[in-house]
Image (cartoon, rainbow, N blue to C red; front, side, top):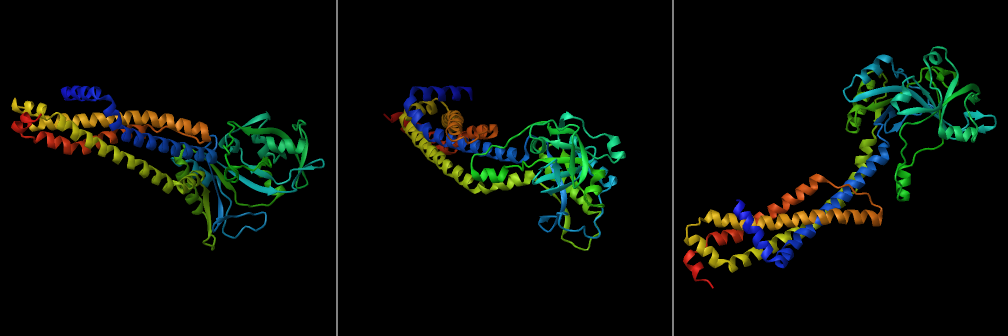
Length: 417
């Protein structure tokens, strides 16, 4: 085997230009596939990152009626829908895919919150339990978080996010100030922010509408005070923190199944469903899947052309080395030895082409990224697979020339000039 490898490299080196031109089809094909796969992988990762964000792995589970989430700002709570109990929440927390879970209520209110004469137009009022901020991956930028005493005393205290603090106070320090929520006074005790900030990459107007987040701001209040400003017995939503990004789908579905087990409504269209951002990312990725697959197949045609070129040059090589083959067979070389030598040469030739193609593909992907701002991510499996596939092409297209060489008549071969 080592001798075959030595002879292969010797033959390639002695005909450098011919060998390079033979490999060119393989190089172009592998380079094109690596560049396409890297671009696809980079784009898919960016789509997933844009939707999921900074890696909080959060999934929201809420009530739906058919395909639309239920909004209790405008509709009453149907019979048979209980509030979510601590028992149900503990069942969700016990799921293998779930790291943490919290209950919250949410209302988008266009004139519900004021500081003096300034309103939080279009902002969200959030009634949260005492574990919400940890589950959501939020920390206090200033002030304090809610305490157990705030919940036990039904304290009218509020925490603002940075957007609502800016909208209501416009640079003024809000800590200790009183705001009005539905004509009820709430004292601001803190400003919350995400522990890891993330802004989606926007390259087009379509990206803006797909990934842009609502920036009207949020005001958080203890969930026990929610009935004071809105209503009693309103079903909560569940914020789940999955253990990993890949667990988000199962965490959401299993949690929804647990909550649906507590429903006793006669309307079968009312169900808890998870807002699965990972699934949304996959759906967006699938929109371009057929185009991407077609591009890979087109690039694969050059591999076929390269394989034919390898077969052609190997047939030429067999003709050139007929006397050498005859001599080897005359001194006892078996057919398998001759076959192995030429197959090894074909495989080495295409493998070198594959290696060069991978390097060219990586460089090409980086150039595309710089020129078009398209994200790329080099796929190690694709690189290894490209080299292995090019070796297989060499073996397949080298079979005919190798078989021809192995079956030459030694007497006729020695007579060849």
